[in-house]
Length: 360
Image (cartoon, rainbow, N blue to C red; front, side, top):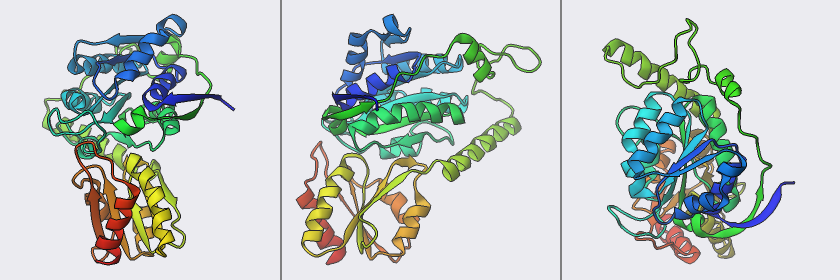
């Protein structure tokens, strides 16, 4: 069993990065995720493992440092919060277009604009639909606990290198700031330069079969060749959709109605299940863990056994679009959300399920 600690979600991400063998972190402080950079600076992993920790001059600079590190086959990451991630979108698109592995973390805060420093889930579209330009996808992991904040760092790096694609941990200020017990995984040694060259022949430190130095770019001026690049990317996304869907079902075996929620909202819904069942309603929870690829088929199968769905999000209704695409148009699907950093209570969620779905 790994080491047990009491940690904030943000701290768990930072510690997991060190233990995962991360080569470099490049970031810029912004509430509510600044503890990630602060923790890394305090731990000084560059003295223990050789991991580079650098506060860049801006979010734009940090994502382009990630681009450079990823191009060299290094295990690199950045973290930010909503408006900071907005500034990174061009760089994220470049990284996706160049097919490079990188780990990104978005600890959502309310918007639009500068908004609030309180928790939100309003960046769902930004993460799942590709906030930058072009037909690309990030693989999106949505933790619902501090434990998953830690676990998903290692998983995120594994998936990023498996698919040569950026992976984003899509969380929110509540999970980033809350403290829970975490079982930390054992440290993984950083790869040597020779191991990187062997594992990443596509990187700038490697060589192509004709012995020429590898060149990283997302530029292709020939339309026919650029179309082939896009077709290759789309084939990769279909492979993700076939192999990387993750979700959790809670109390769904006998459920007649379900909540669909992720992250903090999913935690709230677990208590709402208890409240609803105490009132005599058979209610369960379907929690997407991968927001992309969205668990379409499992939700579609479950939807054939129920009478209605309440989608619960801390936004105006973003994931509900994916839910409606997954289920029959005849099934009643409603939404309940709060804004401005207000977290809905289990009582509110239960009342809205009864009024909008069960009694509607």
